[in-house]
Image 1 (cartoon, rainbow, N blue to C red):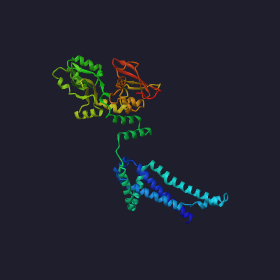
Image 2 (cartoon, rainbow, N blue to C red):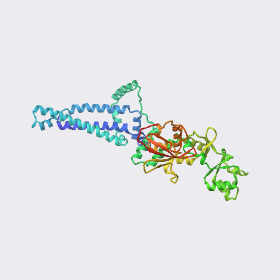
Image 3 (cartoon, rainbow, N blue to C red):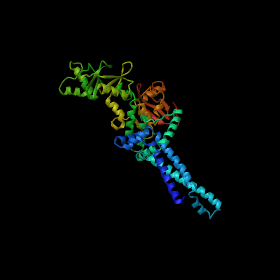
Image 4 (cartoon, one colour):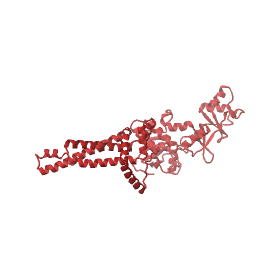
Length: 438
């Protein structure tokens, strides 16, 4: 065979192998979600690619048959194709026998390098960069090859299926997208600059709604501003003026005897009409609304469902002894989700200091604490027994923490800085050199 014709055939074999390699990687790396979007937009090629991804056996059988055929033909055609050229170059500096040997080795290495570079590495790297765009281009020709090689495909695919069943391996790819997958994609997008850090945090917070309890977002018992049934008109006016809120809890004698709640706009309307806002007169029933009571072990996701079913945005949280432990509103839940995107004027629960330490509020959700110090929240000891930093310290110390108490975990020292009665107000968190200790 003439050398130019042989070189042309080798070039065609390299192109064929490159096409097969590109087709293999593009189909394997193509994201099903992206292909589904293209299919929904009316791209028939994306629909065919999705059908192949569901049962890819025939597709990859064609790829392997083609690649092995090309490898065999390349070995037959390429054997010594460049040897005469190398021999003619070396015969002036080496003996004829040595020139023939070296020329053959050089020819073999050159042809092999061309195949490795242009039919394997380059097309596979290209397919990894833009798999969806390329799979749309190759799916048509590959379907024709699947039709032409149907007998061989049927045999080899059947044998492969027998082996898969023998080893009890899955026959279909798991296409389920888990929350971990979504969080990983959001983190990758944030690192690439395609997603703002605050937006990534919102996505993480949404998935934490199923794990965070209402206690992590509620207004605690000692901070609740409530009205009593026997409060006078002057007392109610004074309390509203000094502590303005949109909603007030109404109790009978003490906070654990919850009667309902009143909305501030309803009270203001009566004030504008020069009517009494006392809650013990005959018109009080028009002001006091039935309150939603929820247990303290509900997650934020569950309390959102309770709000939806009851058509309310305000709830009282009670413990197993029917004692009020806090209140929560729809705005509290949304603020937890939105994080730093909302309420920029509120006091931050975690403050990063110039020396690299953190000053944290005792009521900071433990998930936010773990995220701030870059620790694994799933590795927290006794997980599930607490929701806040204060609860974490109580469980770990097995007592009510006192000022200057310290605890080391995950390479960080937690020091109690301020205690108000039995309530932990502030905790200083600093990085330490010692290893992980629980």
